Length: 428
Image (cartoon, rainbow, N blue to C red; front, side, top):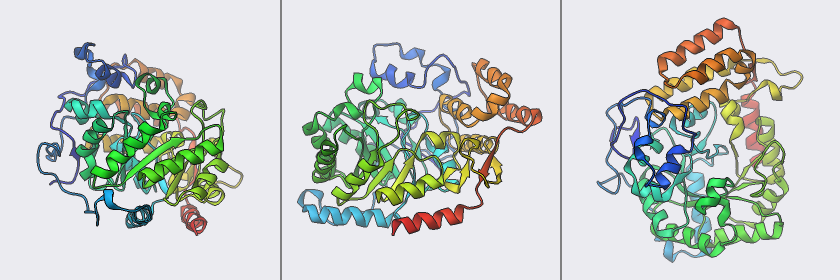
């Protein structure tokens, strides 16, 4: 199997267009309602390149696929103690990664994961994938899931409310990842309508069934990502139930379902620490990770085994290499040898290598160049007017931005070795 890039199916679109009329979630919403016109999935939902570098592979359910490392015993006969031991053995076999790209709908796709990995991320999650649509729709699989041999360790995340459908979706990708992750934390309106994510929190028998079904039938470990309850005891009980059901790793977002705005609500590290102390499996923390000093503080204060970052990485994919945006600059921080425009160019080159829908590219360009666009809003307006994007246009836009004058630099980056030593020290 050619390892440069793996796509979950063979469908490809044959143009470079991008339409701005569809929101980021349009493709998912349209497929959730097949009666709506599929013909409206126009330029916004095409891949930025129809080339697959000669490396497409058949769907794992349709042809023989490479098998993951076999587990020693079937999961159904393992005691709780043995499951915990195996959870830690697997985690350590992966190198016990501590710096991770969180799952982000439409934003933690392959090119962005690879950019973050270049700058220090040690593991990453895919965007949340809708298990039913992933099971049923080949085009959705083709558009939304891709990976490559360098894209490891990898968590593939699904939302679901039906154990059988979740299992069918997971079977399609288990050969290409290190964990199948269940999204139990999405707080958005679409999750309420679809009855998944954080809106399953009150239906723990269903959640337990989702976990157990995967644990008993997959050859890769199962992980979960949750939000906390307002009551700490409820959170601890919830986490223990997931561990008992066979969850091998738990990521805890330290905000409740109602605390959607990270700028208004600080993640509760004390609650995350309590979960870590109550469980025997690896635990990850999500929330309040804006720079490497936050990483070190979180590891020390919570005792977790790793941290996830989401929103900050979208602005600064070099966070884990010790770089800061101007917002988090402290006295004594020196201007780094990298800026966000450099990161955009690197990202675009990765998109040429690993094609993704144009809507994802547009979103990342806006996020990474936010500070620059505040200085040069006329360039942002030009971008917004483009109903059709090409790489040529985007590279020319970057050239014009440079000519207009430098935007805010990134700071730091030279203390990454010290930061990593601190991370290791916090781990004990």
